[in-house]
Every structure is written in structure tokens, then in C-alpha cells.
Length: 363
Image (cartoon, rainbow, N blue to C red):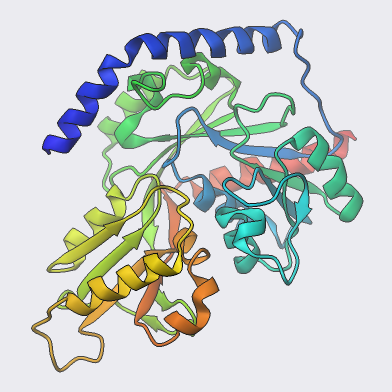
């Protein structure tokens, strides 16, 4: 609690830098609005998934949701920047690709959906033609974390905002977490409030709708986090989390709070090793994890899984390179997905599907 108070106090002192940051992004957006900076359109459906803040709104699970929903209807591909990868320029994932080459989130997409083209490229305006050259059969592209990158104009903009940190209540970097203007929300066609309470009331929903001040062309949805069955990082064996199991949570994600809350509700106790977002694990890190795990004491001596190591899918793709070292460890991965509230999943699915179908008809 003290460290959080200190961090917030320190960020308030950075307010002058936030005002300079706001000025910079305001000028940039004005130049795009006035068509001085150009936005390029492409002749196929582009779906952008993004946010106005830095990290932690659930972009990767939303990209996966879209891929899962669309892959049997259309030939879709994903395009990401490839944050913290060790390479530059355009790259298309193949059977020998690693997370170091394309980044952890694209690698996660590639491992889950090996039949779907997964590409990376810092300059999307350059990467899109290269992707279409490599995969000319592509009918739609999902742009991961592309909302603020206005050099490419997507036909469908999906904007995510965290229920616990709505963009309407946030401030600009470095005092707050906003990396784009609050007013940029007007460019979104769909806004999704993520990480809601599963039991969000109708009255709570109404208040949020009122706060966001939607425009006539915008649709608002609400999702909660839904966790899947734990599976072993190398064998894929699934288990159910036992409340008596001691858990060592190893994570390098922007916002581990929902995962910690889940463990507080489903485990008697847990321990945590937290790394920075997109942390690239080293062998020294793995040794530290092993040492910390060995020190865990458990009262459930009879169970073969009296204690486990738990990590996220995004972290797992950065740990699998230690395949031999982790094969014998009880290292389990927990998948996460969006659960649409108020029975609106079908409505969302139809809106996205209709966008692609209607785009094809007009071409």
C-alpha cells in the first residue's frame, strides 16, 4: 500500500511532462484530422483492436476471440507490431519462429492458431502489402494494438477500456496511463469495457453508458474475464486448481491484478514473482523461479500437485525455450478469454461478421 501511494505521489509530480505529452499528441491528431498527415485505406476489411492507455485492457484475448470467431468463415490474418522482439521490419511466422523473432503476443497467436497467418511489422502501412503478397488469399486482417496508429485507416475500430481504469477517468502519461487523446474515442465503432464484474447490474451498465457519452454510430459492450482450465506448459495435461494447492504465480504482464484476485478467491494462499511487462526470461530467472518454488511449504503432502507454478499464456511463450529445464516442473498455464455480459456476444459477433461481408459486397 505504501509503495502504491509513493508511486501515485511521484506520478503527480510529473504533471508538467504530462501536459507536454498531451500537447504533442493533440498536435499529431490535429494534423491527421486536417489531412496534413495522411491515412491510407486498403481494399480489404481491416479490424483494429486497441486502447487509449498503456497495456492491461485485454487486447490479446480480444484478438484471439476474433480469430476464433472468424477463422471458419473467412481467411483471416493478424498483424502486430511485435513489441520487444529482437528483429526489425516485416516477418511472417513459420514453423521455426520464436518469440524473440516476432514478440510474445504474436507467438501466442501463432501457437494457438498455426493455420492462421501471423505477421509483425512496425510500419503497418508497409507490412500490410507484404502480408497480402505472402498470403494473397487473405480476406480480412486483424490489427493488434493499432488504434492510435493512424497512418492506416481501419474499417472497424474496436476500442477497449478497463472497467477499473476507464479512459474517462484517466490522465495522460506519465502522470496517468493515457497515450492518446480522450477525444480519440470518437473514432471507435465499437467500445468494449473489459474486466467488468461478472454480476454487473443493469443500473451499473446504465451509468457507464451515460459516462462514455456514445456517438450515434458507436456500440458499447461489456466483458468480464473468464479463465480456462490450467494446462501443463509442455505436455498440455489439464488440471483443476485445488484450493489446498500452494501456488507460485510467475508473471510479466502489464496488469496482473485480475489474476491475483482470482487466486485469492480460489486458492488458500499464493506467492508471486512479478517481472516487468514483456520480460524476456533468462536462465538466471528460471533458476530463481526454481529456488523460490522449492522453498514453498505445503500441508497437503499426500497430493502429487501439492504445489505448482502458474503463469499466463503470454509469459509461457517466453518460457518454452527452456523446454528441457521445465519439462519436469509442475509449471501450468492459465488461459484467459472475454466473456460478454448481458447476452450480447451474438450481437457483437454479428456486427463484426456483417462488417466483413458488407465490405466484400461493396468492393
